[in-house]
Image (cartoon, rainbow, N blue to C red; front, side):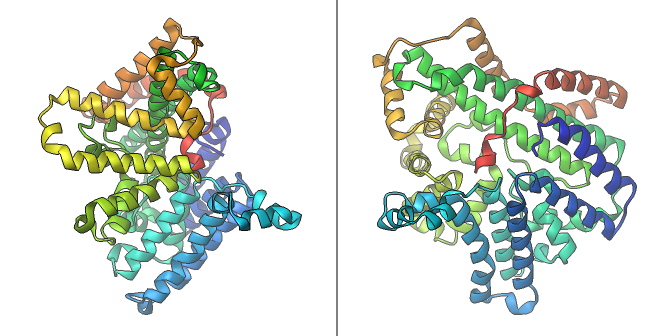
Length: 457
């Protein structure tokens, strides 16, 4: 089940809200939301829900009591099983590919079936990182990681952010979850939450999915594109992944707000960043902070800057996907960030608009590795320079859609719009009518909507 399905919007969500907020209180509300979250996740497969349930039980059991604190062996005991599940479901094929062990596995039908018939649980990278953060925070005696089982189970499985984040740290939401049993939804929070959900759906369905339909046919033969068509494909995917993930994050924040949980922001106009380092402070912010605090700093941080940047970005790339193209994408961003660090005195002297344009162009070029294989990437780059083919289906509609995406991306921040609507004194009725119009327009095209890109990560 996904957020842009009618079954979720008009069946699962209303029933969950009705029962959990207006029928139940106290501990029963926790168990209701946990059961609903497992049901939500279970639509992707019973095995996947069992993996999630096991991880919750295991990590909670191992991290209990004062004996866990500063006990390295117990810390590894807590995080290794979730990591093993992540590796098995997501990276087995990648690890075995082209190795003697991989050839041995392929030669045995039963063993091959065990590894080849694996279906990746949606969002396993997200909840695994969340579990690791909890275990490490417990190990370091972080007060935010002091949770009873019902709170911890909901903290990990909470359906608004389960599948694609934001990656939440215990200290960010512990107090909010503790107060969940007596939470009452106010009209102000209802309007605000609905605004996030409706705008997030619009960004996903009307912008991200429209760009996918326009650019999709041209992605099939990158070597045959004209330079203009290649540029369009690169820019279209850049805006597509932005609005796809941004839309999901806004919906997640809005859904959580309906239940009294304020999730952290995940985006802060990243394509307006002035340099590669600034970009990673704005894009997928919860992942960036997670990598900084749980990987980069423990490795030594700035004491071995280049080495640690390369390691962390390589892992960041691998986190996004089990293929060498993702690793190279991570290393590409490592080169951008470390390269900026070496030449920042020159870069920073450029006019701000030049910095933003150059940074956006470099980031957009990197996304090509999310679309194509290495061979196809080479063909695409050749086509981009003007030495490709003559295939192009570009029309005024193509460029118009891209122009709308650029205007929304660079000149509109939905969170600010929602805040201004609330602070302007607009009545809930008027705000509801406006959101209803946007929602109606979005629902007209929801049948053409695809799954979220970050579900595969």
